[in-house]
Each structure stands twice: as C-alpha cells, then as structure tokens.
Picture (cartoon, rainbow, N blue to C red):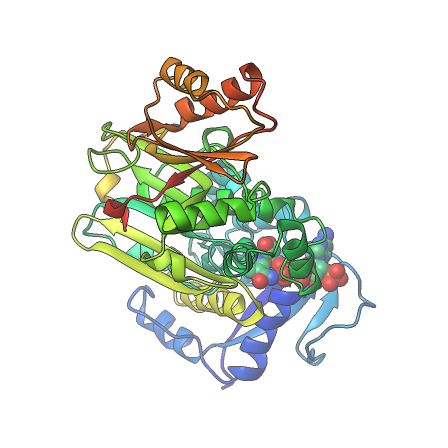
Length: 462
Ligand SMILES: NC(=O)c1ccc[n+]([C@@H]2O[C@H](COP(=O)([O-])OP(=O)(O)OC[C@H]3O[C@@H](n4cnc5c(N)ncnc54)[C@H](OP(=O)(O)O)[C@@H]3O)[C@@H](O)[C@H]2O)c1
C-alpha cells in the first residue's frame, strides 16, 4: 500500500516559496509527517506517521518567469489561478506571495473551507487580524473532520521560532514585555552607520538595495511599518490584545544621522537600534504604573553597548521576552532569508499535518484569561532629543518650553554648533516629549529643523 499524501497548494514561488519547495521536496523528500499525541485516533496517528508531503500546486503571477529552483513536473503543477489552491484535494494552503489582495482572498477562503493555512505574511495578519481570527474560529470542519488551522511562524523574525515560543513556552508564566530587533534590513543599515561614522543614511540604504536586503520602495522597512506588524502579532500572543495601527506610535530610522550615533556613544555609551516593544504596565516597566495597560510601539532606541541587542549586527534579529518566572530570555537568529524563513514554514506544515498547531489562530495566554487589558499609546522613558539649531541658542527658552510640557531636562549638550542634544529625566512620557519637540520647532527662531527623539533603554531593562 502506498503512503498517504499530504497535499500542499502554494501561493507564491519566489524567495520563500522556492525555499519551501526545496526543503520539502529535495532536502526532506522522504521524511514522513510526524504524528503526535494531538492526532485524535490511532488510525489518524498511523496514517499521519506514514504520510508524505507533496507540493502539488504552485500559483505564481508569471508562468514564463525563470525559477531558481527545480520543479518536479510529475508531482507539481504551476498555475496562475489561485482558486486552484482551494480544490478539495489540497490539505494545506501555503501563502508566500505577500500583499493583502490575492493573498487575503486565498487565506480567508481556505480557512472558510476548513483548510490548514500556513503564511509568512505579517502585513496580512496585522491589517486583517480580527477578520482572520473570526474566520479561523468559525471556519467549516475540514474534509477530515478537523477545524481549520493557521500557522504563521515565518511571519515574525523569519527563522527564529518566536511564535511557537510565545504560544507554548510561557503557558505557566506571565509575560511582562516582548521587545527587540525584528527587521534585518534596518539593522543592517544601523549596524553599518554605527561601525563607520562616515557612512550616511542615503549611502547605506543604496547599498542595502544593491545587496537585495532593501526593496526598491524601502518605506515599509525604514519607516518601521514592518516592525509594527510583527510586534503587534507578538503583542497578540503575549497579551491577547488586538492593537489597531493608530494605537502604535511608530517612528522609523530615516532621520538618524552620524551625529546621533556619535552623541549616543560619547554621552550614553549606547548605540542605536530600531526596537519594537510590547509591554504590560507595572511599576517596573516603561508603560507606567497602570497594570492593566499594554503599550506597543516602534522607535529607534539608544541601547547600552553592554546590552545583547547592541551586539546584533547585520541582518540578524533578536527578541527579549521578560516574564515573571524566567526573568529575561533572548531569542536570536536569522530574521529573513530563503532557508530560515522556509524552515519556519516547513515546521508549521509538519505541525499542521500532525494537528499540533493551536486550535485557535491567536490563543489567549493563560495569564491573560479573564483579565481586562487595555491598549495605551503612551509610555515613559528617559529620552534623547536632538534639535537642529543655529547660534545663539537660548537655554532659558528651551527650559521654559520643557516646563510647560511637564518635562524635566537632565542635560543639554551642543554638537558641532548646529545641533543640540538633550536628555530628559527617566519619568518622561512620549507624549510630553513629542509636544516639546513640536513646540520648540514652532516657537523658537534658533531651531532650524525638525527635532528627533528616541528613548534610552534603561539599565533595568537590560
Ligand atoms: N524574503 C524573506 O526573507 C521573507 C522573510 C519573512 C517573511 N517573508 C514574507 O514572505 C512572503 C513572500 O516573500 P518573498 O520574499 O518570497 O517574495 P517574492 O520573492 O517576491 O515572491 C512572491 C511570489 O508570489 C507570487 N505572486 C505575487 N503576487 C501574486 C498573485 N497575485 N498571484 C499569484 N502569484 C503571485 C510571485 O509570482 P512571480 O514569481 O510569477 O512574480 C512570486 O513567485 C511575503 O509576505 C514576505 O513578507 C519574506
């Protein structure tokens, strides 16, 4: 008797799709689906143990485009019709096309039909989280009687299994915060600027584009939108909250200059990293003292050189989870790339085939069951502020505006005659700093451009 086949229909045959195909077909061709105790019956377990995974359809935009992976035409058909992926013989739809148009239609329809869906698409998960959650929960029973399953390990931090860690590893714990570097492109750029003060933002962006790290339109990466989607997904897993886009303060790296790196190093022994943070309020975190508040934000951050995050270079990703029982645990590795990302997809496929994915799309953590967490969009930190200026500068005028905004300034330094760098007290709110920056630009003649501000990661958070 030949082994049962677990059939994959894949939307997308590009960087990640090609990697998934290679890992499944070439490198792990003979590996059976692993059965687990989650399989419901002995027969299902036996069948699963013997099943072979086959990618039977790949849907792409352009059939004539050369592919950089070999396709076995005896088992795999290429198509341009995404609806073919929804046919009854497909057990699992893998979405590696990206975007929120066709990908959204296919993902939602597949879930409605009770199929398993595995996706790498953080933008889709973030922008349509409530709909996806609703459809995944209410989807039809699949042909085999199971509910639809959704896997999205590859959507956050590529190859780092942070989704699985948050879904299963903290069942008996209470997470306080999840924070880290979740975008390889911007980390590559910031690492290059930190290493060589002569490297300017525009130069390193061009270099990242030439190397294929940054898209032709780099907005999603450099303005922090990619990190925003990822940290919102992690916030959902850590705290059970769906955070809308307009509640996530998001600043990218496009205003960072070599002056910022120099001041960060000389005055604070810090480097600069783009950090996504999701934190629960308490007396010891940056969200403030409201224990039922959760704040999610993305911002370039001054990170002490002694912190692990400061030592993540190039395209690497690194996420620190702070929890009651474990203190701090850090998960680091490749945040993108063909095989790391494909590895996460393949892990989800195997979990799905063994019915080992969670039964709901975004499980609520045990520690948050019955709690009423609310999303707040302000947080407290010590801030670094840089103000472009010309002489003469009035420190008294700056101080007066700071006072009006309820800010205490801890230090003011002049940088090469055309910039001021300020540090606030550690109890400053983001909203007060934002107001201060807007007010000084509007009211003070010696301010010549838009001020920039960033929180400084405190030693407590290390
Ligand atoms: N690349 C990474 O390192 C990485 C890491 C983590 C997550 N991801 C996510 O993975 C997804 C895929 O990324 P990628 O880098 O593999 O992208 P990619 O190389 O551009 O590949 C996209 C694939 O999707 C196909 N496609 C796009 N729109 C389609 C449509 N309307 N109908 C049919 N096929 C369509 C394209 O077909 P053609 O080839 O014919 O144009 C292509 O094969 C994205 O959501 C991305 O955010 C990527």
